[in-house]
Image 1: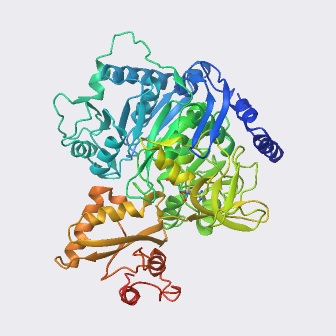
Image 2 (image 1 turned 90 degrees about the vertical axis):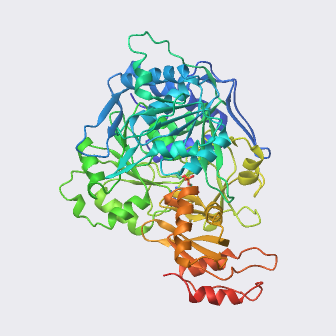
Image 3 (image 1 turned 180 degrees about the horizontal axis):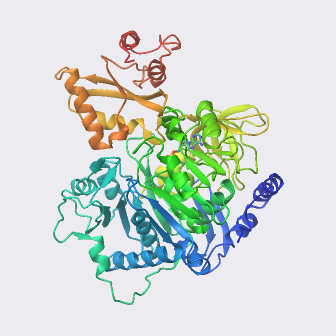
Length: 636
Ligand code: PRX
């Protein structure tokens, strides 16, 4: 089997790109025909970026799991769909074939139904990287419930906020997980999130590490018990027919305000877009073993561990552990053990492994690798080269894939081995993607050799449709800055050959180890502390994390700096999660402000970066004297 829409030559890419711009509807209809639809669409696209309103494959009926599972369970029942590598390398892993995965999904879909979950209900999933997480997502999709996955590193407070915003009625979790040697108690985070909660009727707990947890009578049930109840019964598949524009999932992401946004993706367009991009960017060939190291709690895992690979009938490897346990050779052991052909990881992981040198690679056979990918933040030249030389052995194209939670799938990337890779460049837009660069006033920068704010001027099927419960927020955030365009929040440059290089965020969002963190969210968390008068958080370059957080904090004088430090860290842990903790905290007497009272972050950023002599004009500030004081006490 091959993919009729797979582009295998540069000329085919160029031709597809041209068609996708000249006649997008015909182009995408041609791709969409390769999926399982219960009823074909009446119209391919209706859109405007003013409201915004974006609809793809209007009138089409489907259930995404029929493309992801049923078709392959018939055509290739014994092909591995998911390979699971556990945290502990001595534990046996698990492989689920397409036939087995379909059976498990139907079984758990029945469990969800038996527990009162209906089409349209929102289900919060707070689970580690085990096959049951993928089963849970697909079972939700099977019955038309909308999943809202919360990454396992988020705090109880973050779980609660997401449950409340999306009005979930059920939570799926486990008793815990080991990350390396450290046990993490996921269930108690859920319990803390649900104190005084009135929305959640049911918590279904998968027993994973056999830890000692409390189950709340009447609310909590064990996953395994619910499945056991079905033994001996003939199950009726509770599959629902969905509209192409029905919601598939909500995924919260940080922006420039204190509150995360629930990005909404729908069914038909998302399915078509992520599968098209999966097959083309990675040049997946049937039989390949594909390993994406992301966590399913982030969009990369949604699109490129679960839905995209499965809709392509691929074999997707999911890994529960961390890259440095039991040692820094773990990724390479996995590649060797399963003969991985395609590896997709993040610059922060590459940099952290680089720090161990090439010793952990010795004796590991990486000869199966054909393609190596990167996502989540700009990849610096050094990391790119190390990855290319030592992992790809100068033999594998590197695909630097640029995209965002809101995009659903990859927008700008090399197609592996088909279009040229250029170090640190994402290179060319995928067919169907029409990027533009604009200046600060929204003027489109024509031609090549220009740099500006990266926008997209035409819809693609995988894009977000709204932000949950607040469409205005979606409009203001993405479509109002430069009317007529989707604005990414990233800066980019276009070289003389039309290749794009992403230069990073131009708003108050920082990518820390590939985790997207809004500085306003961290400030709100810090400000929860009574003794904090005001705070400002900015990003600064970090060797491994890419960027790290630097917080400037004004205290009220009733607390020692030592205590404040401890309390602030605890507050960020509690409000968001440990990964959002600032690396540096400086206590200051004042923050530089404009005459209208706005914090001059530009100056704080420069100081955090160590560029003290290049602060620009500070004389127009309301309080120029604080700048000297901040400079003198900068945390190194
Ligand atoms: O700044 C860009 C950066 O990650 C942001 C999106 O983060 P998130 O929604 O969490 O999704 C991450 C995984 C898709 C973008 O606005 N980013 C992502 N990929 C790249 C990148 N920056 C540079 N190069 C990339 N390849």
